[in-house]
Image (cartoon, rainbow over all chains, first blue to last red; front, side, top):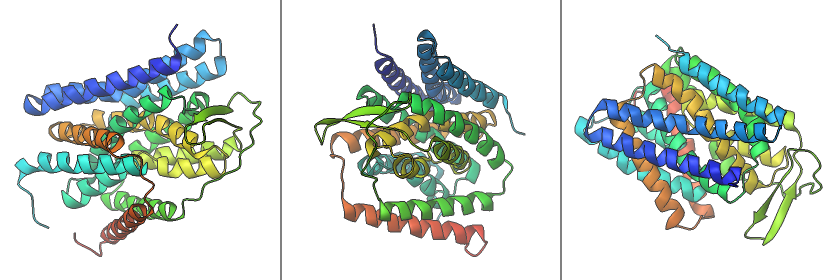
Length: 84
Length: 279
């Protein structure tokens, strides 16, 4: 059984490193690849909220699951807010 | 102001990112504050794009530091979940607001934030006494390496922390900093959380807060994809160097020098915002 703290730690690390590598490759190749890298980077904190939410849900800790769900909802709403 | 050869801008950002990242790691200051000053004042990057770039640098550096803190069990995960509901709400509102704000308003707010940061760096008061008998679900504990003991603490005044988090999130979304400088003193002095746990928990929230604002800038096409690579890479390399090669420095002199520098740029930004200075 993996600890939630260790799992979140790994998600953050792998997410950021992947994002940095892809964005850096994008610098030398194309804007599309850089876009993907930035996307992965922005997605990383989302992933860790989902991880934490699932952890609290598995422990039937409904208050904290609801908080995670709220944060994810705000993030999703934000990602649909397009200005201009 | 000399205009830099466009080909040199990525190189300049990479170099400065390494500098900002290592200094930030040494002083426990997010790299965002230094990055945004550089992008705005040295490179003359338009305010919204500078904020957007700074935000992705903040996501990278805080997530990397956050991964270490949570592995070391310094982060109070439950408290972070509660407060980040507020920072994220503020961050979305802040980013949305920022896009309709004039550049001078962003400069003025950043100027004020720099002054505030400077003052907190000068004072740096630490709350030393905690209520160690915790009974609530938010109470936490961590192992303090320096003291060789497990520190337990009780979280107080949650409502003040919630308001501070909301404000920190909004400010983060408008000026592109992490917002730790607003949260950490409140968490330490008002919520009575030991400084190490406060810093780790705040840092943990900063990543998701910056992401909540960054996604709005991203969707609006304000993230310069050509400059994103050097920005993130620089800050990451800097943070790595800062944490690995240089032990976390408690250098008072360095802190005070940086505090003066931040106050100087705070004044410049306020003058610019008021139209009194054409930098």
